[in-house]
Length: 308
Length: 246
Image (cartoon, rainbow over all chains, first blue to last red; front, side, top):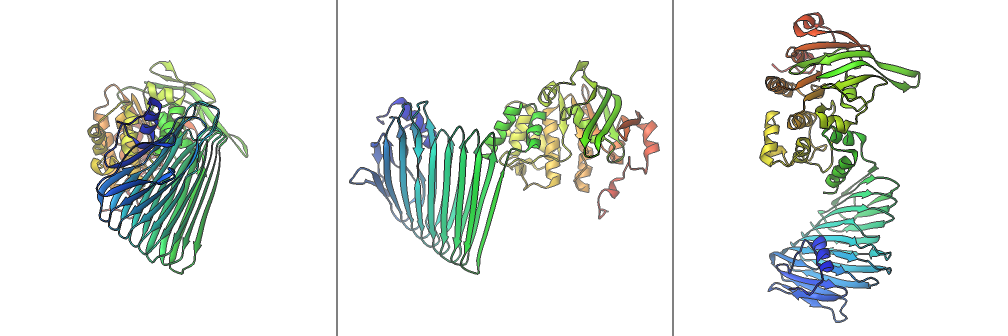
């Protein structure tokens, strides 16, 4: 059993869909300390000596195993930077679930900056899921600034799902990736901001190997007076293909800046970007109203679908 | 029963106020399939949108089962039992066919229930139930899904705005079968179709002709249809599809 209070358990459910100790390898960090940890025969979790992070080693050929490393913070005023390194052995197929939830009822800011580095071995397959969640009605801000670095060896695949739907006041997310021959990176970001929140997403993907492929897609909704910036640069340094897309719904007094960037340094690099920002189409609302939904219910359904 | 009483509607255009519907009165009785036809630009689709509440009339009243619904919202009219199928169905990113059908029924339904409605419009339910209602669907597929939402809603009054627009000949034949099926089970409800397709006019109980915003004529199919043949108000299906299929 985990030594956690009810608030921490609630946050854990939000960010990792976990009710208790997960199967497989895990480390649960609560208010700056480990609240539970387990390694398995194939996945070793080693704490760093300074206590600020983990080294996670996944043996070559590890298949269908998972690692959970959620972070929950329920005390106001904690500021921490955590370094987690993942070494994923050749020919593995694993799921890594991270995520951070902050409940801040106090007046001091709470901040968690997770620096994650992934070394994805040849022919390996990784699915990475990261959810951010904030709650609590204190004046203190909930701040998350994740940095993710992905180094992909030949023919490896990395699928990243990044979700932040509620309650995080300020985020600056930076994701950098380097792809070797035949490596494939898929990023799906879903973001909703409200109130006075600010969320910045920066992606920098270098496709260095022949046949590498990157697909970075963001769907977001900016409500109230919130601000979002999506800045994705794909660089093709070899025969490769890349696609980046920002699809955003703007509401109320929200503001969104999309800065898609492409750089081709090889004649066989095929790069595409798409960006669209707009309010919910009036016809969509009308259609759902003709099915008996109110205008508000229609908006809710449209946004839920869009961010699904 | 739906009653339109002296409905007028106009829009403000660059060249001043433009009347689109002029003093139209008509009754859509229960247990009947009514087709409104007439030349393009005559105001047919506007009339359908006025009934659904998407537009509000400048003058006149709309009564549904005796109740004045003129000032009601689209939502309230939908809840009273008016269904509306769009001429150009709307696309939604992320909303699946199943979601849309579930919302149309207004209750929790199983995938098997939803499949029933898709099968009725000639779609292989298994292939479509989890598809997103987005631009990956063709015009004909969207149209059938739109009609499936009306079947799922099972309204007292179903309004179809040019259901044949944007579909291929095969889908059109299937569409006629769907309407014939609805026609058989019409008891206690009514169907209003905006169309100038001869095949649709042929299954009507009554036909109304709207020209230049006015009700030019109206009556039983046998009275009205012969006079419309080979006019823009009754178009044969082969002239709607290029590359006629033998």
